[in-house]
Image 1 (cartoon, rainbow, N blue to C red):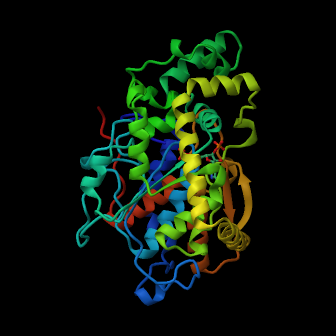
Image 2 (image 1 turned 90 degrees about the vertical axis):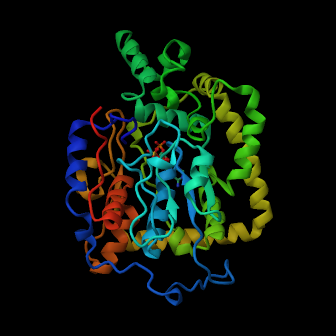
Length: 401
Ligand SMILES: Nc1ncnc2c1ncn2[C@@H]1O[C@H](COP(=O)(O)OS(=O)(=O)O)[C@@H](OP(=O)(O)O)[C@H]1O
């Protein structure tokens, strides 16, 4: 990811590949893809989950880091592309000037012929007032949280080389031939600088993405209430399929549109096994995230109960059947190491973690291939493709400082 303004946590080789991809007219790869809905009747919702057809409402998906958000974003990209939606893309690269708080002027211009943005789902640090000022009033707001220990381990592993606090810990650990994570967790305050914006992800990363301030514990209860009022749905990665069914009900999506493969998963050798002491230290260091997660997990359970548990289980089974069917049709190999994948479907790698991808079957029609490529397409490639489609130009790099 281009995690920080003016910098990136990708290796130089990966950056070269990305640049090549951005310039190669990604559209050409899908010339025969006919996914776009042309008339409302072609999009008639036959699903029992939704009794009447209606246009998908505008949606903001606040993509928190390392919580399964790329998987959700992929289905929103597919949905939006099919609907001919207008995406609110960052002016530069894939993120809204992260880690600055979001501002409406970080968004690229409204394309000619569009009266409003329909979908915004790129990484940002939340500022709800700024978001509301540029999205239509009927926008649905959704985000996702993941169990905080797992989130932190993934954040640490992926951003060791780009978040300064982690990098200092890594250097100190190397001297003593120790693990960077345990070194960091032993005395995190000695590595973490509250005034360094790029250290935002090093403590309570989900709270940081939601715009909360680590220094202001006194407003915590009000902050939670505000977030609860803002988001119609806070998905929970540990209940991913149940979350998707609730998302489908909100956005009036069919199970086929909710089907997914798990994107952005690290290889087994990039995962750090955690003992009980390490887990306790992660929880203590990230206690805002623990509170945040517990609060929204409880709320999620209430939402699930409102939907009806029997109905939810039945719909989860239907979603899984749909996902299985599509995966069988599209995917020839899963958990494929990056070196064995073509450029177009290779997920972005960081210096410190290996991210796996999917190989698409070869014996498909052009139409099927278009669909299947999108089904497994990593975030950056899909982002570049849609940006090109919307503006007829490649995404802009961050200008040199
Ligand atoms: N469906 C589903 N359920 C549960 N977990 C999932 C799912 N999809 C992705 N993942 C895991 O989420 C991690 C990647 O998160 P993101 O896509 O948000 O990463 S990123 O911030 O956009 O880089 C990454 O976690 P780690 O493998 O621990 O790094 C993925 O394995």
